[in-house]
Length: 270
Image (tube, rainbow, N blue to C red; front, side):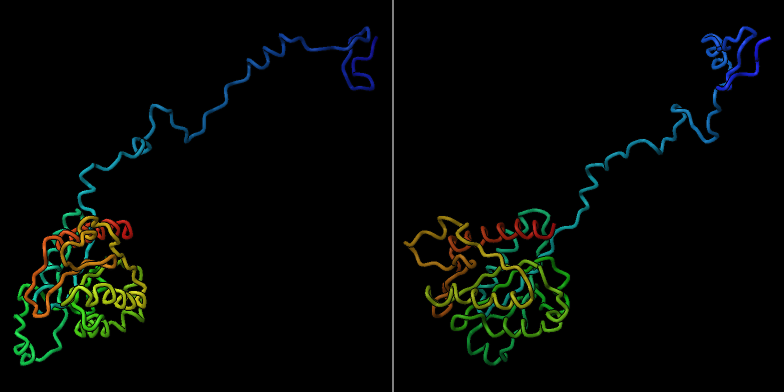
C-alpha cells in the first residue's frame, strides 16, 4: 500500500502515490457554507439615521437685522455756532450711510461766563451733553470738530485731549478711526494746519486718521467763491466777526466727508 500520510512535503497521497487535491467545487461549497458575519451591535441602518445628522439649515435672513450698528461719537467745540452747525449736518449725513448711529457731544468750556459775554458768544446747546472722557472707549469711531486758534485747535479741545492720559496708557482708543473738520475766520487762517497739527493727538493714541482727500470733487475745485475745507477735512469760514455762516458748497463737502468716513469706518470695524 502507498503512503497515505504524505511525503516530504507533508501533502496527503492516495494508494498509488498520487497527491490528493481539493476540487474547486468543494472549495466553493465550503465558502458558501460559512455563515454571514454578524453586524456590529451599534450599527444603524441608513433609513434609521438620526434627524440630528441632517445638514445645518441656514439662519433666517431676518436674523441679520439684529447686527450691531457702528457707534460714532461726534465731539466738538464751538464758540459762535459754526462748528455746531457742521456737527449736526455731519451727524445727519453719517447716519444716512446705514447701520451707523452717531451721537453728538461737546467738550467743556474753559472760558469764564464774563469773557463769553464780552465776546457775544451764544449759549451752549442744551440738547447736546458734555463728553465724559471715560465714555470714549464705548465708541467704534470718532469725529472731532473745532475752530482754529492761530493755526491750531482751540484750547478747549486741546484741554479735552489732555484729560485722556489714562486711556492713552491703557491703549483704550488704539485702532479706532477718526476724522476732523474745522472753521477759521479767514481763508488762509489755518484750514489745513489746524487739522494737520491735531493729528498728533490721534497718532499718540494709535487712532487711524481718515482724511477726505478731494472726494467732494467740484465742491472743492471751484475758486470763484471763498470757502473753507481742505484734503485734511471739511471746514467753513466764519469771517472776522463771526457773522458768516456755512455755505451750501461747504456743507456739501462736509456731507461727502461724512459718507466717505462712514464707509471706511464700517470696513475697519468689520
